[in-house]
Length: 259
Image 1 (cartoon, one colour):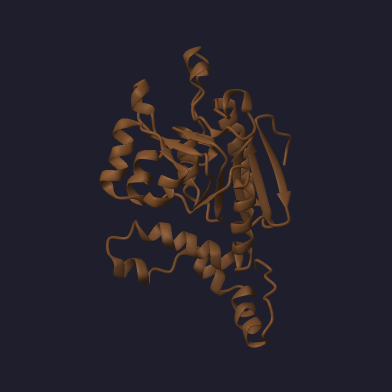
Image 2 (image 1 turned 60 degrees about the vertical axis):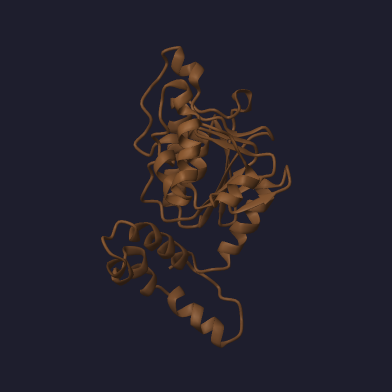
């Protein structure tokens, strides 16, 4: 992985930890940061040794305040990569699981990055909002659509139309936050979730994620259930497909090869 400027990348075993590193602007992102994060996530997707990722923000104030409006107001705007905000919001083909460790403010595009992840662990002081209408915009990087699919319609519209701020505790009650942890413990909590995922077969995890999301595209429940997607086919032809039952029969922990 090439050197990065706007994020920190650390690989620990099968886990990649990506830390958005612009604390001077509450980890807000501009076009250069989007392009850099696009490369980071493309590298993660291609690396067979990396099975799970965590994204968080530098410092204890903000996960990400979203779009760097000062850069945009100065006329320095450039188009985001095809993968979207933070290199994630439109990356629909990434089957490896990603966990958001929300360590503070998650506003606008920052919230959309978190919603793009599969699991959200939030520090108790974290705050979430989609305030785009307050500055003449919409949460068009998946915030409107994803939130509307995750929580009840009226609750989603109550956030989307007003831009109101929601605490971590309320986010957990609404259903878009998996766990609330003490301040300063977001990354620790996310690592705990990541290690639970690593106990399972990486191919089976990827197949499960792919089937979960792709199933929404099928016209009926029956078709979603009966469709065998590509990673499930890969999984059924793998050594790990045999290793799981063998380890169970031998009363030992499985040794996953990801092949």
